[in-house]
Image 1: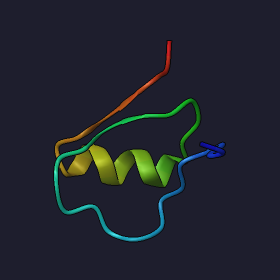
Image 2: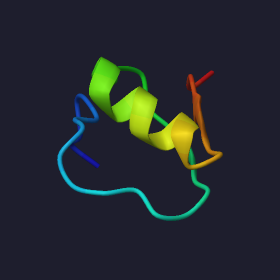
Image 3: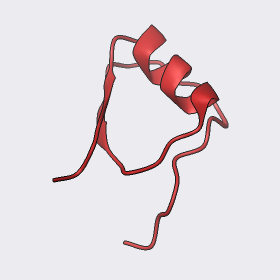
Length: 42
């Protein structure tokens, strides 16, 4: 899809499970605070 890294811009208002190889610390904090999770691709 062409996405290299998930960044923490914007708001996360719902529980999400995102599959991504790289993420910023801000993005990780926002997703986990909303009850979601970051999943590493296999």
